[in-house]
Image (cartoon, rainbow, N blue to C red; front, side):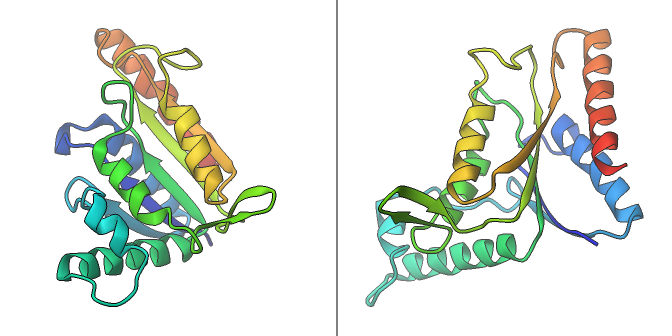
Length: 197
C-alpha cells in the first residue's frame, strides 16, 4: 500500500477548510491501509531561509549552531519526502500565493545535488517516480485565471525536483456566501473521493 506524506500549511487551526479537506482525504486512505505521515507546517514551522542558513545548506566545516540545526532539519525533511510514494499538499491561497509556511518547507527541500542537479541540458529533478496531490482552497474564483499563481508555481517547483505527476483539487468561492461555500467544498470532496476510489 502507498506511503503518503501529508503537508498541512494553514494558519487557521480548527477553522481551516484546507485542513478539513486533507483530513477527509486521509480518512479514505487510512481505511484502505495506507501508511500516512502528517506534517503540520503551521504547528511546527520550518525556519525562514536567510543568508546564514542558505550558506549552511552547502555543508562544510565551521558551521554555526543555527546552520547545523537548519542543515539537520533539511536532511530530515528530504529523507521524509524520499521515503514516501505520494505527497499531499494543502495549499490555501493567501494573498494570491501559497502560505509562507509551505514556501519555507520548499526552500528546505530544494537542494542542489540532493533533490535536483544541473546538467548540460539544464536542471534535472532527482525525486522521480512520485505522485503529488495539491488541495488548494480559495475565497474567490481563480481556477485557470491570471490570479492563480499557486498552480503554475507548484507545478514548476515540484517538477524541478522530479515530481511531474501532480493533480490539483480546487475548493473555490469559499468566501462568497453559504451556498457557494457548500458547493465549493462538496465539489472538492467529490474530486478527492474519485482519487481514492
